[in-house]
Image 1 (spheres, rainbow, N blue to C red):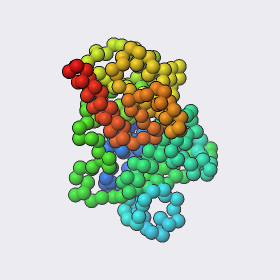
Image 2: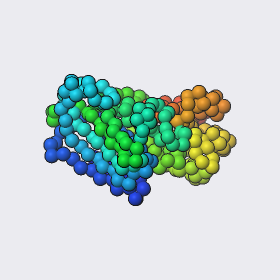
Image 3: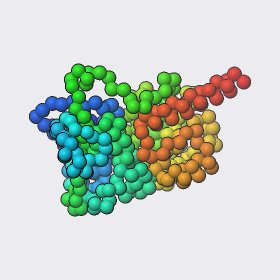
Image 4: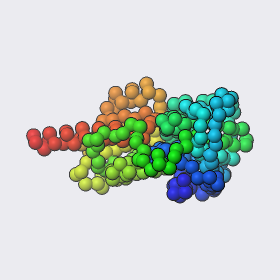
Length: 305
């Protein structure tokens, strides 16, 4: 958590104070590092978007009993036992009970459509670790998210954490250009891809992507991970221009619009890969690996021909 603080502070306005504190007891929970960063970053960015000026990230421990679980509002798969609790509290605008009841729905957002990875991704990551989330919020006061992760023994914690959906063993590594106007999203995706062994370029607009692509060598061929919804030049326009000048470049579109809209866009634009937000980071790695492998195979056939 302490090592992640600089990333969290960089993801929010300098006017937002992000602090971390831990309880007196030291406990451990099993979660993949990329999953952990994804969960915390999403919650802190969510607090920023809610107008928070102060965000506290607090770790503690608790023992949940069956009777407490039955009367709690924890969403997830918790059972009686010991839990490590990650709490993210903010002083933002808060939420009504009606809004709070929908925040984990896929594609639901109070912001501009297509932005961010969403709280549904947070819930999915926590559920994969047999944990849960409780939300307390009041309009005009702020929100408090509590993540419950089962506590494990020191011997268990020393073992490597397997990814729930491991990337393909034949994963192809190369250069990926992440194109999204949301800097927090770019940062998270870029970090995950670098950890997977890719060389990553991240740019904040379609125009910048086209300019950067023009300056790159033709070999090896980069892959574009391209958001559909961006100001000035959206992903479909960027894709059309790239196809005209660099037809060999594989493109993976990502979007938070409804699946029917994205499928309609895909039928016209015909990208090499497609990701619907919110998506799992391992899913992203899998799609990129598959797309890169297919592009390499096409290039090899052209070279032989």
